[in-house]
Length: 326
Image 1 (cartoon, one colour):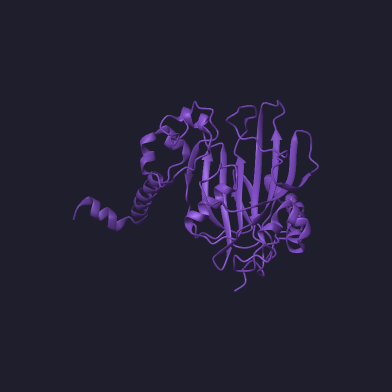
Image 2: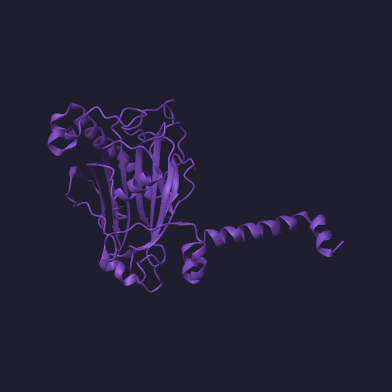
C-alpha cells in the first residue's frame, strides 16, 4: 500500500480538501470571473458563454478587431462590449436578490435568470434578464442594468440612462430626488421582436433571448421603466441603475389578449377600456414600486415577513401568495 493510499484512507479532511480543490479549480476554469479572463485570455476559450448580442453600433465595434467579440482590454474605454453568460434558467428567484453590490427587489412570483452580462473594461456595468411564467407562458420580463463602480459620465462609449426619451412614452413622472440624483418612471407599449436582437440597453434584447429559447409570449406587453442616476460631486463620474419590466395583459396562462392590436396604439389606448385600464394600472404600480427599488439601491431592504411583499403584486400577476394559479 502506497503512502498516498494510506493517507487517502486515514485523513478524511485532507481527502475532502483535495476533492474540493479539484472541483473549485474546474469550476473556475469553466466559469472564470471577468478579471481572470482579462489577466489570462486563453482561459476564455473554455468559458461557457452565450454569444454576445450585436449592439448595432458599427463604429464602436470596429475598434474591437475581430468583430468586437473579444473581452475589452484593461486599457479600453469601451463600456458597451462585454461578455454574456447563460445561467441555469431553472433557478427559482424571489423577493430580494443581490445586484452589483446592492439589492434588487423582484415583483411577486417566481422569477428565473435568462441572461447575464458584464460590460466595460473591468465589468463595471452588470445587466441581468429575468422571466416569470404562468403555465409556461411569459407574464413578465425584467431587464435590469447597474454600475458596480462610478463610470465616466462624458464618454460616448458609456451608456447614459435618461428620463428624457420620447419615443412611444405614454406616461412619465420625474420623482423628487436630492441634488445630483435623477429618478423617474415611464411606461410604453412594446412588442416582442421577430428579427435580430436589439441593443443591450433595450428590453428587446431580453425578448430576443426568450424567443430563441422558445418561450410563448403575448403579441404585446406594457413596459414600465425606472431610471435612477447619481452624479459624482465632481461631475466627472456617475452611477446608475435602470429597470425595464414588460408585463403581459393576456389572459392567465395564455397569450390571448382581449383587446385588438389597434387598441394598444397611443390613440387606441384612450378609446379601449381594457387597454386603457391595464396601462393605467402599470402606471400606478410603477409609482408605488419605485420607492422599493430605491430602498434596494441603498441596500436598506429586509426580507419580507409576508408571503407577498407589500406593493410587489404587479398588474400581470394572477396568482395567490407567491405561486401562479394552477
